[in-house]
Amino acid sequence: MKEFVNTLETTEKTVLVGLVTQRQSEAKVAEYLDELEFLADTAGAVVEKRFTQKLDYPNPRTFVGQGKLAEIKEYVEKNDIGMVIFDDDLSTKQVANIEKELQIKVLDRSSLILDIFAKRAQTATAKTQVELAQYQYLLPRLTRLWTHLERQKGGIGMRGPGETQIETDRRIIQRRIALLKEQLRDIDRQKTLQRKNRGKLTRVALVGYTNVGKSTLMNLLSKSEVFAENKLFATLDTTVRKVTIENLPFLLTDTVGFIRKLPTNLVESFKSTLDEVRDADLLVHVVDISHPQFEEQIEVVNKTLAEICQSADKPMIVVFNKTDAYTHIPKDEDDLTPRTRENIPLEELRSTWMNRLSPGNCVFVSAKTGANIEELKSKIYDKAREIHAERFPYNDFLYQKYDDITEQ
Image 1 (tube, helix red, strand yellow):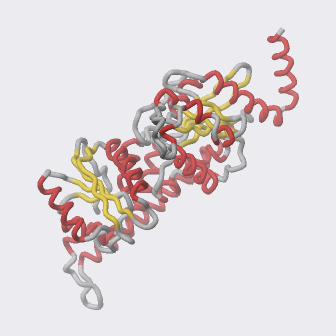
Image 2 (tube, rainbow, N blue to C red):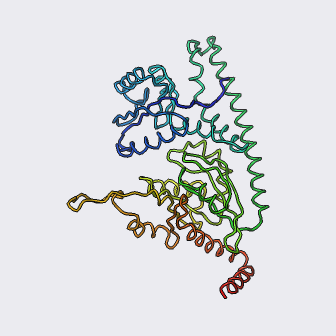
Image 3 (tube, helix red, strand yellow):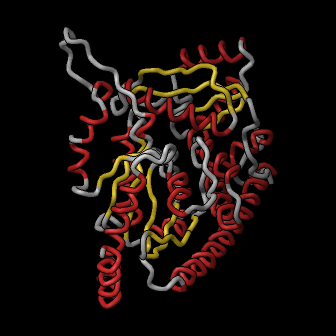
């Protein structure tokens, strides 16, 4: 059986392909391709060119039209390109037809994200979660792996070894999937027990889109050394640290980041990781305010939290991070076109819908420079103390007495 291994090697030359449809405007496709290029860079590929095409719906055989595929083929052959990455998921038939035409490696967004997760996974838990997602992705695509036996016909008296091998592989993978699911159930039970053993300390979870600076904030608040890098999915494993602000101890959790078009298999596989968010008393939603599409990233995270983590009713602090990287383009006085978000300075942006997003619970910081970190600590302390006071009223009375003494 063919093993599922990392697909990308470092510095592979690739091209990206996106489709402009009735549901995806040209501007939206450009945003998705920007993110896809960042994903490719994270995986170790170098993007040489982008291809887009306007179609009412994807071509069922080759995703793009024959003319666009011929254009891609010409560029690939002239520039020694070894891989093409499509922004949307491809069917088994589409991958086979495209590979046959281009004679190079073909990936879609899901397979690229799986490759990154496979490289990033460090602990046994993360490796098990990623392996399960990989096999679930691979199972319906087994036919493409056995095209060298495609001349063998099925039916009565015509059952060839190709079909037999596919069925054998399918049974092996299904058994492996069942085993990995059982291992994850054991991990989930262990994680649940660990959470119970942590006592009644208030739990604060950092959530947000991938690469918004959660791990850097974790390091600042907990004075620890959690791995942080300017790459997508730098953190896959949940990290929990005990933090004390003033006189109040609580548990701070760093979680895996979210992303648009995240493969369903990955979400399901990382259920035990998301349980840390479900069990949190307070969520700290970290947003990269310097990102051009940070509003959409907020929507992606909120939708994921509501649908998967069932945490829409949890108290939340919204942290707009990377204020040091925020830039705006002032409009000329004689420019009568409507202003866009890119034309608004940060100080003005702070007084808009952002403060209404979570009244009194928005803070603008820079984890890189440390700007406004004390304000963030103060807000976390106030919220964590409210939660602690509801849980332990007598302890809060002692904290109040302690505060009175320190103020005197």
